[in-house]
Image 1 (cartoon, rainbow, N blue to C red):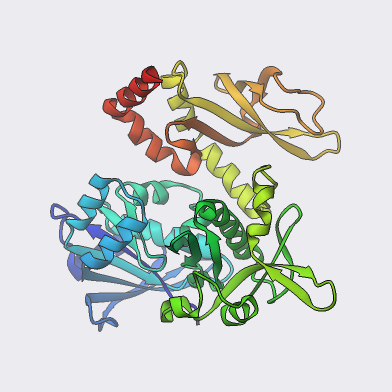
Image 2: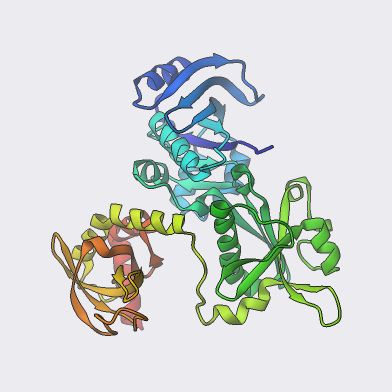
Length: 426
């Protein structure tokens, strides 16, 4: 049975206390298709009150529970650590005593859309939240994340649905997801990963999880490709560990009840020299990762990224106008150029100028099948060609998902001064 998705908005002391009556009144006032809202006996001992309701529109019908509870500070402390919050964000979240939560089962056909619905409703009911605790993926989100995600016409990144935890001892690491189960999917594991390669292997784990979200879970031991020349399989954890034998991190002795259940361990599989198959770690692909291989992205995710890039393009261009002369920031755009075969090739360009309809940009690399441009070519292109954009700088690669973080960073003069001072020292 698919567990519910549980989000709680942590409320600061200055946020008004709505109470069950106030929430019922706000639900009536919202422009959301909420029906059958009524108070019921709380289904959890820590909930002060509970409202049962149904989101019903032309596409779906989702039962949900809205409730009030005291903020669990122990869980918040753990979740803020895993969420990599700034110190002031974690402090604000930990100072909260009250929380408003929404629990619902995500729809099978569109779990990401259901998650976005949950975010929008929570923001409407708790606009002053100091942050959000996602109990399904064991992570905390900072102030501003809820508002940003709710206001977007595009759902958040699929990887917002789960987190990857890393457990290590010595130089070996066990990577595993939390949150995929609320999508009706397997949780995924990798074991015995060298600690220094955890970030690279987490990228492959996220790729496999994202493809399963869009395409469904393949049968156990069935090849599926996460990238060019990168076939993998999954096996139930117990069976996989039996095949692998002794492992330093992620074995049965390392697991409690939360880390068992519907979990699959990702492996590579090769034909044996004599009989059967040889199974191994995805570390087999580590040399390929240095060459920046093509990791697969579903058509659905490509369309979502394009929509988000276009929806937040004005914010990207606003930063470019303010910081285009700044040497430590680079602004690049990805344009979908027509190929000789009638398809689209997505190519990165440096942004040089912009007007209301077009972008002046310089091609960053050699296209495969777009003879109209070449590496170093500069020209004007329609904004309609944009499929992605990125800002390169002190925060790394900032894409449309992360622009809020960069805006906050650049808004603080001390941050700007600190970066410029470090560059002078170099």
